[in-house]
Length: 361
Image (tube, rainbow, N blue to C red; front, side):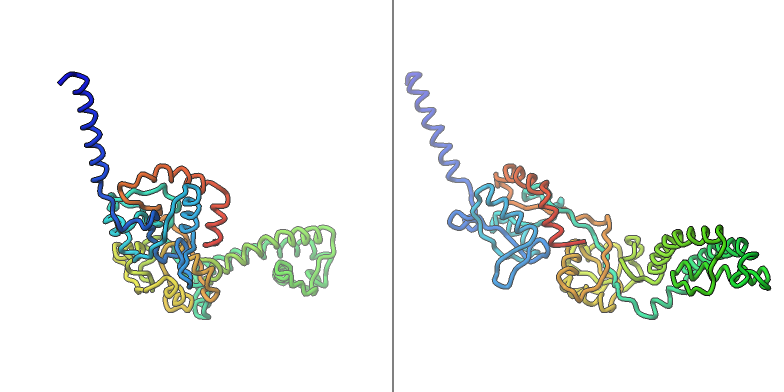
């Protein structure tokens, strides 16, 4: 065999081997249908939400639709159980799953760039019973507020009495003793601060009125601060800041047991009432059947926004971050190209608008 025939034979053999190798590559037959890839979805608001007609919406769904349009991907959504999504992706039943937390035990699949991070959220009821309000009035914090305010009123009352005592017999001077005069000043400072202004006492001197005007301006700021402090003491308004996890102990807590947040409570040996859904837990919280409900901040805010009967406050924490990404089968070559489009989308201003639309703060 001459050299030319040898090279020709070698090239033919190499082409034959490469062709057979490509044909022999295993491609799961059930992960594509007529050129469409099967994309796994499951009901997990606000990321994936199944409508009554079987259609899907949500943050992850809209993101995927934008990516598919930009890359020309043909797909069909396939509903799966959340607990089975990783396994079906690993075994080839799905080509992608729209939402999986990036974690080390999912090393047998590919992840896109992280497009959203959720944290453990603590929801507390905003409804206040008379008992809880009464208990708030008998606390050291409330006592400190009363003492501080009394000292301030005493200072202003003493000052207005000292200025007015010789020129204003009707309100502060006359036959009043020093104690009585300061008491009149204390009363005037109080009704002036609260803007009640009965008109039974008023300064008449130049310096007395100057002090009164200054006190009126200062009193507006004092009243605003006092209101916020009192609301905080009796437990109304926004969710209280809670130390995690120690602040959760010895409370009536609810959580979804098979969620990462329920597993976190189990890890910390914190007992809790188990719920099938976030919405059910928040309803019980709103009705004060439990005192705290723990779940992802994003999901809690979504349900609070969707259900007007749920009245709770939500504290976001820096505990147990869940970094969400799109997951693909291990041999899928589209991930690098898809990441370029994904990063462009999540860096646009309308991405945050989309986030806030589904889970307003």
